[in-house]
Image (cartoon, rainbow, N blue to C red):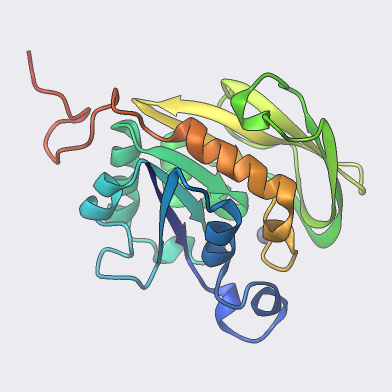
Length: 239
Ligand code: ZN
């Protein structure tokens, strides 16, 4: 079983509005239902889950992969929480940051750049193109698919050179974006995926859910990776 922790800041969906209409019990639960499968054991957590903001050493050690959605509460994630998550990723925890998680403390720490991008707060049609068809995260995903409405994220996206670009996004307004990206940090595999604006029905789209479920399996640590034991940077005994 792959142990999946889906974390959401859980803000936009908690008051009346379009995000709540689309995701009445939160995007984390929509994603959990959307990727549910016999080989996945899924838990969810939010910023308010516990004193560790849902991201305790215990929760992160349990998980093989962390799916992370955040937008306007980045600053409410404590530095120590972000460092804790980054440490677990470097020690083998898979990490799947979604959409506006590009601006999270965790992602920025792991990338080492400010991760800024161009954006337009006007929902518009996006086409996603597979540009690495043999990549496992693209398995079973059409060569091209459209989302009728997404927030425009455009280049330049200030990230280090990714190890692979699996999806390219094109927006009706003309912008393009590296939408599906693979990185490795320490023992941890990272896959960033851009679609998922809170006022769009993106996490009900079967192709988007397929990408996320592929990314979860691709990034999940296996028995070969160490599990952070709280002491050593990579969880390994000194020679
Ligand atoms: Zn957004």
